[in-house]
Length: 443
Ligand code: ADP
Ligand code: MG
Image (cartoon, rainbow, N blue to C red; front, side):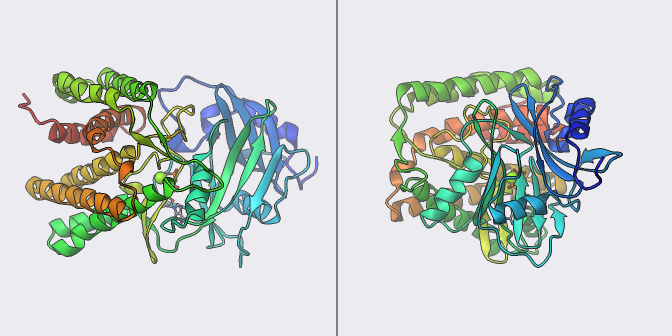
């Protein structure tokens, strides 16, 4: 066997022998998902001992970076060179051999090929290559829209600049002729920290008296303006989306309503204990709110960020940038990348301001009143700046304010589901947030 290239049969044998969950990054090993089996589908050779494997699972494909030699094969990590090789393929705009893929873009020349993992909670694998680019690999890819590629390209092309500039992607065509995106590349933003980091530090600093009001509340105002620009850009035509604006018909609005009810039901189902009891006590109030979504007919729909929360706002040397346009990683592939009301993003963001406050409460006990004040002020400033920004950009029709509260309630329900599926300690955040959103006497 040649030492230089990974042998297809060897990789395929490993793919089928290893527990399929081990093909995924830890965050994607959904503990409640039924076991899956992986069928090798394709292999992109990336040089000595490196490859990108594509294997079919029940719905879609797992994309596995592979490193190895004649003796062993394993999931590659930062430093092995898979991500740098993908960027190299993007720069060279080449497919490799019989691989059914195509790389394209305009990746920068690098001084070196060093790979550094981004050390935060992630749903995908984002690796910094050569200090200039971030290569993001999608561990689970499925046919359908590719918002993580299309939305940044659209936004950049209509002049929205608060994002990491898109550099290119690696596409792949399945045997069934479906088009999938396996990886994307964007410019690396030096010093970038996500909002669970910088915004929480700011809030805790304010609670500790180290940050003044002006600085503590500034981000909410600035981000409201950036969100307005993003939504105005989503409503602007480009080559990617020549007709970017539509209106929700009755079926769409009913779909919003029904999926919100389904999330609320699931939240109840997966939440036991005192949190479950408090949620159950709110069922009637929740359902009354969610019911209003059915009357959303006529609301403007566009592309939306789809997973807009403080964690997607990077603060870096150049200011703020919005990242991660893949949509909600927990949503069904069928609805990812679909048009939606921009209110979805607004609601998600103000919810996450609340969540940030809840996390701060766990850091600084006995500061509940101050945190509530910070939440209320930040929320109000974000919404004010957003509405003002839309108005200045002639895009006010994007915001259907009557949908804000019902969508917030739906998202508050979703937090319990997220906690049950991925992050058990999130349950207390979901609980505190829901109690603040729908106050009542709790026993
Ligand atoms: P995921 O889908 O895994 O959440 P993100 O696109 O949100 O992936 O990226 C995860 C993290 O990686 C971000 O929160 C941020 O800290 C960092 N990151 C992503 N893109 C860049 C970039 N272009 N420059 C600097 N850091 C980035
Ligand atoms: Mg993210």
